[in-house]
Length: 65
Image (cartoon, rainbow, N blue to C red):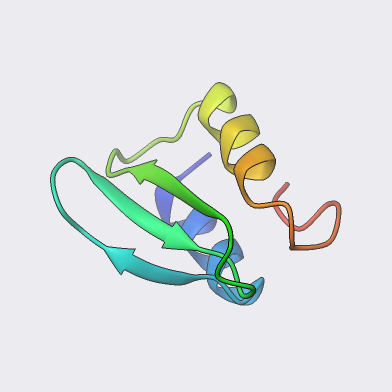
């Protein structure tokens, strides 16, 4: 999945960028209890997508497809 699609889905789910240090962008969910790291590659692998969905438990099911 393309990085811009993942970032758009995160923004639409109410998530915000917390920091952009290193090779990853740190995102936080709307409740500010959950965070995840998204690599800055053009393509995000299916395994990373699964980790993002698992890490951010607040958005409704199916928010990132």
